[in-house]
Image (cartoon, rainbow over all chains, first blue to last red; front, side):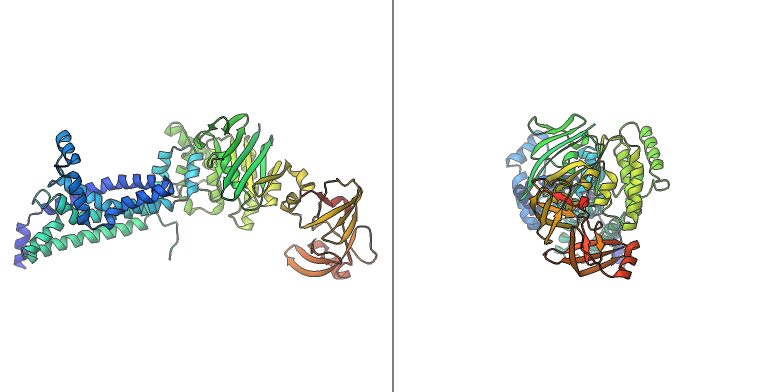
Length: 234
Length: 349
């Protein structure tokens, strides 16, 4: 027991904050991008729809390291986009916290997009028609009617996105690396200390992750149960 | 005042091609499911885009394919009552009503309060639609429409989702709520009772086309077209051969009928409503048909007899009100049914 307290006292909590910060930022970006993409894809013509849908879902299906490989290719400072970002906007992606966010966003985004789309497709089209005849703008219909009606689906999508972003490892380690205090997330910390044979520290971080996971699941169940009191279910 | 609708739209194999014009303020569209009446209504509201056509309300062009006019549904100032009411499920009744309103927050709140009162929704303002009964939902949906004072209100099968016993009450209620409304109301329904009760003018549709249009009472009295007769509830229809100006042969019933008024040359069908037969015992009279019983159904207030004519192929329906049942108990089934000649509907295909 004493060793655990010792570890806790000396523990560098930065991986927790880096992970949470990355997770929250990636979730916020994915939330709006995912909803926007879901809306656009729903309105697209069937063939275009299938293509874009495949492209947007790809990061979820590919091994994260493959996504990481593509991200590296894209953002490397020897490549056009990387050069442009660095020279014009003074933005570094590789080996920075921005890299963490981008990797987590790309990997987690499909969860948001797919959940949002599935939820939107369930929305009764008459509600949208009704909004139009009532004189509501398309944007107002979307944010005031469609998104809230699809609420439970959108919420669970958001939470899953957060969970996935929080735990991102493969693509993050390739794009952002594992620089303690800057890009060192919990997942990377665990992998690192295990390699050093420090199972106790790993265990502490595992416990932290499990606590977060339970909170996430509880939040998801609460969200799914909310506003559904009007529908009886078995 | 007036509504002009010319809509062409092709959806797969189905081809919608309706045109009608009406000066009435209460218009009914009657047709079987899938005849395109909902699509017509949606085109008027601008929710669906026709392939071609013209839509005008009181002289204002809302849609004109040749002139490339297509007013957005948001700008048409038309109210649409959906079959399932389409109340926004996550908003309270008050919020729902407010959605269609313009103006300052105070004006909107005031208007919402007014509508809540008019539509007897007191105490329900803060409920969600899912917590309301069917009738309350309908009133809330109607309040939401009436709140912004549209020029036209479209009712899409407004009573089809309701229980039978509620239907009658809500029909009456809706008539009262709409009685102060001075715009045009178009109601779509497959129920002839609803349509008859509601509309001054009637459009009958079948398979994407207008069969007939005109004053509701006239159409019910003299449907002229076979499909119109069927949709206005005429149970007995037969192909006929016109023998001369006053005689027809009813081919499916195997009987010859004599008619005092002149029979139009185009007559190819005849109809007779199931309530109008006169039962005859003993001697055969003019325009009588000999029948034997093929089946019977007893309803709370009516008996339905399905009778096979002596020389015909099609069964004849005869509906008898409860107060006349005694007659049958005393004398048994009649030997003949007599067609009252003025009630025979002379129809075209």
